[in-house]
Amino acid sequence: MSIASDHWLSSVRCVASPNCDDRPDPDDISLIVLHGISLPPGEFGGGLVEQLFTNRLQVDPAGPMADLEGLRVSSHLLIDRQGHCTQFVPFDKRAWHAGHSVWRGRPSCNDYAIGIELEGTDAEPYAEAQYQRLVPVIKDLLDTYPALSPEGIVGHLEVAPERKTDPGPHFDWRRLLLALS
Image (tube, rainbow, N blue to C red; front, side, top):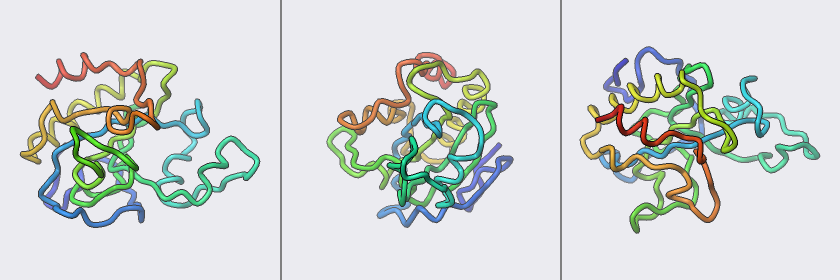
C-alpha cells in the first residue's frame, strides 16, 4: 500500500464523497483523528456508513438515526470490522469529520487533520483485522506527510471532548503506538 501523487491510497477501495472541500493550506496535514462509527448505533456492516458519507442514506424520521437526516459528513478513510479500507476523500482535501474541534489551542481540526473512521462502538473492542490495517495505513501517512507524527494521532474525544467519546475506552492506544515505534 502506498499513497499516490493524487493523495489516494493504492490497493484500497475508493468511493468519492461530495462532502469535502479544499484545505486552507493543503501542505498543512499535521493531525490524524481516529473515530468510531456504527450505523445503526451498535450494528456493523450493511454499508450504511458509506451511504452516509456519500449522501445516499435513507433515514426514517422516527428511527434511531433520525438525527442524521440531511447531515453532510465524510472521513478520509473507513476501516470496517474485517479490516477492509475504503477511502472517501483524498488526503490533500478537507473531509468533514471532526466538526467543531480544537487541538492544542488550534481550532478547526478538519483544516489540517486526516480523519480515519473505525467501524465500532465505545462498548466493545475493535477487531484484530482493524489494527492490522490501521498500522500500515498510518505508517504510509507518516512517511508521506512530513508534519505528521505519532504525537499527532488523537481520538475524536480529544479534539471535541464536550461532544464526543470515540474511539472509546476499548481502543488500544498502547498497541497502536508500540506498532508505530
